[in-house]
Amino acid sequence: MSTDRIIQFELARLNAHLPGQRITLKDALSSSNPQVVAKDGSKHKFERMELEYISKIVHADDWDKLRLPILIAVNPKLGRGAAEISGEVEVKVISQILGKERRDQEIVIYRPEIAVVRAKLPTTTQYFFMVG
Image 1 (spheres, rainbow, N blue to C red):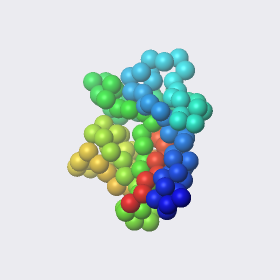
Image 2 (image 1 turned 90 degrees about the horizontal axis):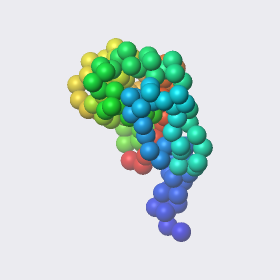
Image 3 (image 1 turned 135 degrees about the vertical axis):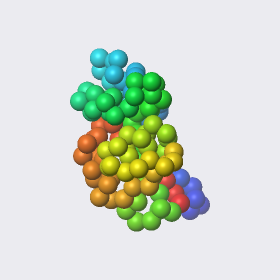
Image 4 (image 1 turned 60 degrees about the horizontal axis):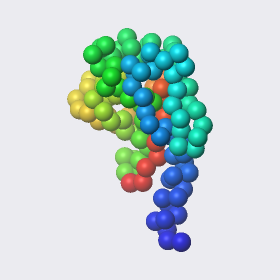
């Protein structure tokens, strides 16, 4: 087995917790049991308090644009302790939580900031591992 195939296999294993399909904030808020099904078949439930917190940050017109969970992409090309979040509304949420100015549809955050985000949004964010 080639090195590339081994890396791809290990990445798939590391990312098995990711949802097969993400849901919008709008759908999560309207659900009595907001959750997604992961690629490994497990269920990932969202805490109602987090959904309500996010709904206060995001304008109601954008609830159908924000997909949950928000993915925190860990990529070695960004450097040690750095991760990236993509998506216009996703970046708006993270920027608001961190008190950062939103400049683009992507934001790079670092270990201390990741800790803040994960502390505030433990069920509505997930790590996504990539190769550089």
